[in-house]
Structure formats: C-alpha cells, structure tokens
Image (cartoon, rainbow, N blue to C red; front, side, top):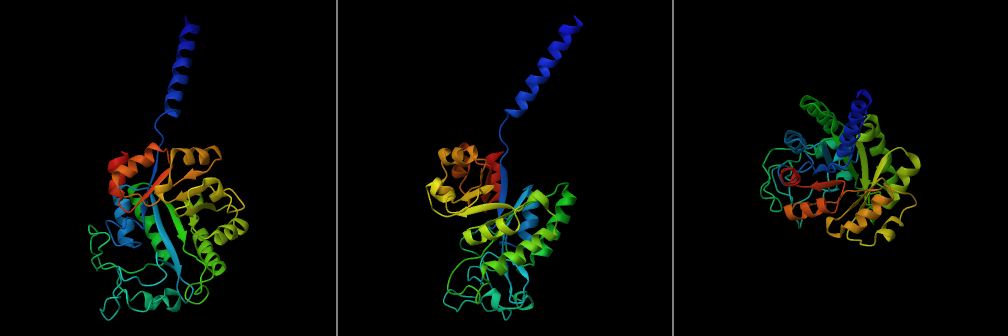
Length: 296
C-alpha cells in the first residue's frame, strides 16, 4: 500500500510538471519607444507610463550628440512630427534638418519634444518633455521599476546607418557602437539587455567585439528568411522583422535554429492576435495597453 501511494504521488508530480511545461507560451510584450501611441516617444514620461501599465520590456532608440553623449531618440535630427525649438517656433517639414550630431547636448536639451499634437498618434498625451540621456533614462527605469517590484528588460536600437552624411551629420557606425555599447554595458543589465539594429555592419562589429551581447537583427520587408539570415556571418539571438512578413513557417524555421522572433510594430489588435497565433516570442507595439488587452 505504501509503495502504491508513493508511486501514485510520483505519477501526479510528473503530470503536474508536464502540465506546466506544456502550458501556454508566455509572450514578452514590449513598449515601442516607450509606447509612442500613448505618451511622447522615447521620453521619461513614456517609459514611466509603460512601467505603470505593467510592461516588462522597454524598447527605445539611441543617437549621439556632437559632444559625445548617448541620447535617446529615434531620429538623428529634430523631427517636425514633434519638435519645438527653444524660441517656441515649430520645426517644420520644409526646414533644413537640425541634426543631433551637429549639436551639444546642452543645445539639444532646450528643444521640447512632447507638447505638439502628433497626427500619427492622436491619443498621445501632451507633456513637456526633452530628449533624455540614455544613462539617465536607464537609471530612472531601473529605480522606478524596482518600486513596482521588478527589473525591466531593454530592447535598445543603435540607429547607425550608411549614407552621405555618415561621420558628419550622424556618427559612423564604429563610433556609434563604441559609445553606445560601452554605456549600456556600464549599467550591468546582464541578459535583460538586447541590442538591436538594421545595420549589418554594426551587428557584425558588436558581435566581434562584444560577443556576449545579445543581438537582435532588425529587418524591413524582406520575406525570404534563409536569405535574411544569410546576410550576416553569425546566428543572431533574435530576428525582429516588420510584422507584415511574419508567418507560422518562418517563425518555426527560426525556432528550429534557436532564434527568437520579435515583430515590430504591431498596433492593430487583430494583427497582435495573428502574431500570437504565429507563436512569436515577443511583440513590439506603440500601444502597450492594446498588447495587454489582446494577449491577456
């Protein structure tokens, strides 16, 4: 009788373990630029709001100022979508571009990037904001998330790119990577840090010089997964494509090779659900509230 009870207990324990391991896959929900649909993009306000919502992974972008500071910004210039000059005039589409790499951070700090209505994201709340230093933003997120009882993940894009202005209007990819990666590693984030980029030169450079950094290969509208992965010399930990090209087949292809699939930027609830059906590992969205409502 004792042996039978022991056997039954062991069977029940194994069944419980199998039930846990076969449960629904957890999907990492990521706030694109902190959740640009809700708050001014790439700002302290956006990250705070995402953390308040319960989002565990923050996505944002890096640029460099002319005096060598790592600045949180998607664009390498002040975009007419959101920027207001220190004198109160609006940056307009027809104006010459005002590149961050040609300015000191003290100059950058005087521009407002949160008060203008943004046609692209009509639900975005209006708050006076500036482009923050990456070091300050990460320190804030670490501290604020700790108050909520968790350590956030970071999916951070280095926005290097080739072109006629590289090295003058924006930094060359080597300087870009050196300054950004050194700063990010100084924060001791461990495997909570993912570095992403579209620039295959930057991917190769980081992989060669900091092989322990987890890398995400960003791609646009390319559809052939074998060709995509063949464009770099190593296997990235993450593939982050435009969500429109994601299929169950290319997700399965990546999973078979140990690559996580993290589509951007998925704002429509129906497409969010399609990504879930495709069994992606994470979803990046301008509307983290929609992610939470749809995936949960």
